[in-house]
Amino acid sequence: MLAALMLLSALSACKNENNAKPPEEQENSNKPVPASNADRSLSRYAPPIELSFVREVGEGLEGLISNLPGETLEDNRWTRLTEETLGIKIKYDWTAKGDLYRQKLGASIASGHIPDVVQVSAQQLRELSNAGLIEDLTDVYEQYASALTKKVLSEEGDGPFETATIDGKLMGIPQTSSSIEDADVLWIRTDWLKRLGLSPPKTMDDLLAISKAFTERDPDNNGQDDTFGIAATKYLGDPVMGLVDLMAGYNAFPNIWIKNQQGKLVYGGIQPEVKTALKVIQDMYNQGQLDPEFALKDGDKAGKLITSGKIGMIYGEQWASFLVQTSRNNDPDADWQAYPIVSATGDAPKVPLKFNTNTFFAVRKGYEHPEAIVKLFNLHLEKNWGQTAEYEKYYNTTYAVWQLSPVTPSPTRKNLEAYRQIEEARKSGNQANLKDEAIYIKKRMDHYLSGDAGESGWGWFKTYGPTGAFSIIDQYEKNNQLLYESFVGAPTDTMIDLQQILSDLQDQTYINIILGRPIDDFDQFVQDWYKLGGDKITAEVNQWYEQRRYSLDKTAR
Image 1 (cartoon, rainbow, N blue to C red):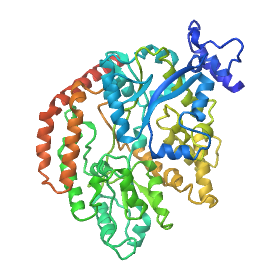
Image 2 (tube, rainbow, N blue to C red):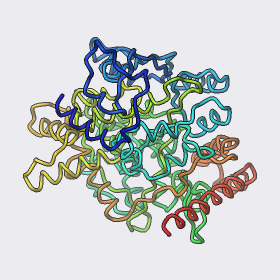
Image 3 (tube, rainbow, N blue to C red):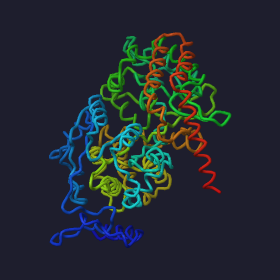
Image 4 (cartoon, helix red, strand yellow):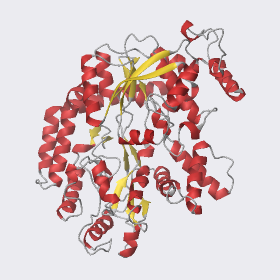
């Protein structure tokens, strides 16, 4: 309590002393004043207020709750903490799964019947703002966001706030997503490499040769033609088992806006390099190196082939270690290792990083306490990464309990920094600089390496170990291989109207070409993309880019 009071007093000293708390936040005189009341950013409502949300639920969240006796979606450690600390009672108007959730949310937004706080995409945020259905949060954020919240939400630069700012007003609080930690690596079954006498790839030709061998040379040694070189799903841009970074090996970047040689922004999905990459993937499909039904499978269904030991390689983010680990359930000898993605030339390729912040929390117009959403952000960050953090109670126990919170902001480089802390401690022998997250991760790896905890630490070791996924991402950054998306603004007017049509056209064209349509269909796609609004979007994106450059130059002067 004393430590908390000291922290919160220090934060409070940075505020304007004339900013008195509104009456609804004053404690009743007969109640003890918690330490958090020393700071406006974590002040408590008395009497408590109710804050309604809607929420997507799925097998992951349901499975988590089933492993936490005495906890439910509306009554758990996070909802209790929120009510005890902030005087905010969390209520869910409704919950739904997957596509049904998206349908219900879309209908709710279209009808204007939204909860007190609603989690939306950038496009939905603009639609709600244009309809006058949500609050301006400009002053609320400035007055109530803690120093930690402001630091964390600015780690991805100005882009998230530019996206959330409409007509000069902050209409939603961005829940920033990491760009760098979404960098893909190449996961390969090393036991198959060894069995077939192969070496890790250094070029795309090497990778294609490995894929062919994994498909045709019976790497699982069962005498059957039942393996595939590489995994894929019907969503080519999936963070795990997608094929975007295979395309990057041919200098193709289909899902991001990039800068061309003339200094203009162009959409990567229509560039000629994509055509080259699609032809390569088409050949792989024709040769049986991809699951013939991949175009019908989402990640869950495609992942079953990994679990059953039928896949030799996947492109995926750092957390893909926990997916490939499932192959060890049936085959304890199955082993995987992360490797850097490779290029056709053998040079270090650029690793595309899409601007990922597309989650915003908006507040219903007329809700009496719009600052409540900012306080939830403050609390989530404080209890996991602040001075009063209880990381192993509110973020990771044996289970990822952070998912119980209605908002889940996090430092955008937290995992990379944890890896660097662990690696420095390994090299120096000094563990004094390890912080909560690094301590937790290292504990899981140490248990695995000691042989005391079975498989539980295998995935952690493959992600955070000396040759794990983050060792590669660390090198990506140091080698200047990271290609950040150049457009980080709010959706343009034409994007709002036509982006989904263009995205569907792209997905359909790419899949059809892979499945056997003539490769020259790509050229027709490019023409159609421009005619259906791509030309207008390109103009709008470049108008934004010029205005942003002018603004930055003016600020620099």
